[in-house]
Amino acid sequence: MQQLPLDGVKVVDLTNVLAGPYCSYQLMLFGAEVVKVELPGTGDLARRLGPDPELNQAGTGASFLAQNAGKKSVELDLKSPAGRAAFESLLAGADVLLENFRAGVLARLGYGWERLRELNPRLVYCAISGFGQSGPMSAAPAYDQIIQGLSGMMSVTGTPGTAPLRVGFPICDTVGGLMAALAVCAALAGRHRTGRGCFLDLSMLEASISAMGWTVSNYLVSGVEPEPMGDQNATAAPSGTFETADGPLNIAANQQAQFETLCRLVGRPDLPADPRFAGREARKAHRSQLNQELNQALRAKTALEWEELLAAEGVPAARILTVPQALALDQVRHRGFLTEVPFPGAGERQVTVTGNGVVVDGVPLRPRGPAPLLGEHNAEVEAVS
Image 1 (cartoon, one colour):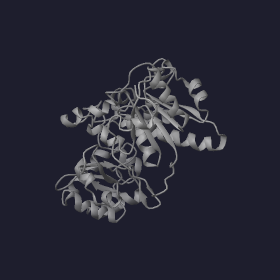
Image 2 (cartoon, helix red, strand yellow):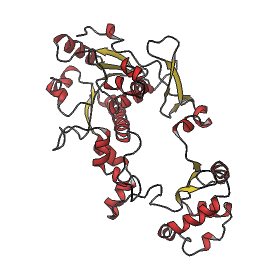
Image 3 (cartoon, helix red, strand yellow):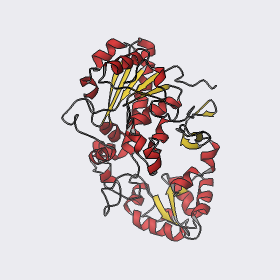
Image 4 (tube, helix red, strand yellow):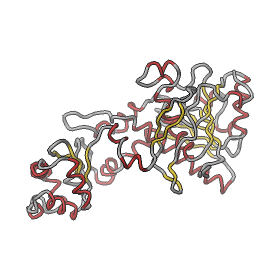
């Protein structure tokens, strides 16, 4: 079996729904053993989330299957003596503890950082929450959409006439999970030097603001308040969605050479000499006029034809696909990004899950087994109660 960077690392995972499970899924893909601790009889709420009511009823909702392949499941009640004893036994042999309760919940159960450090001085404890463990908003409830709104993300999504809009997938949960996985890996590397664990307090709000990149930095550095621009890129022109003979096409000709090549290929070599379009700032100032000229020329071919022609000469361009079309791309299949794993407890039935886009020594990262049934690995702990 392939040796992976986190082989031998044991993660005790108290998380639910998405941000935390997405974090532990990344750690699992890199080789960690993830033991998912779930509330007896009910388990992770994601077990009941998804478009298929029958799967939800069975505790194998699509949302759960997508983020929990390759993990183990044990049922423990942390309010019972037997459950607490079993939990502490798990912690004694763990490298990482993950949770995404509201701030302070685990501490009120008797497992604050001081107690956890007593139980295992080498433990890396990562608490994922909406706002962090301290501050005036720390106790407030937070779902992805709440963070999208508070972060400013929704204010710049859409057009001036449609904003604010929610991003079409739970991006703040995802960003929070990715940042948590990065923090855990950094903490494990630090522990290798010091021998000591640490407490990682991750705020989804702050991680999401950080991930907004130039949208935030343009304001902090230059005082320019970002505005919704639809499918256009505020930093360059032409950069956005354009019209072709059969549908939209993304073009990001952000460099002068790319712009000149684009104009030549669409049959408008005169455009770079036009004073309105000659330089980067001029093009941004006359974006609508430039887009109009390019759209007229681009309607001569299909989106796929332009994609192949422009990309071959170094101009970033591609069709706008649906999710099924994206998953069917030869590039995605070539890299082994999708994996079939057994459906939990269902014999020969299979379910397809994603990797994370990382290939290690030529081998794509994949889950080593299916998502677990609730309590499937109870026998591996001392007590279930």
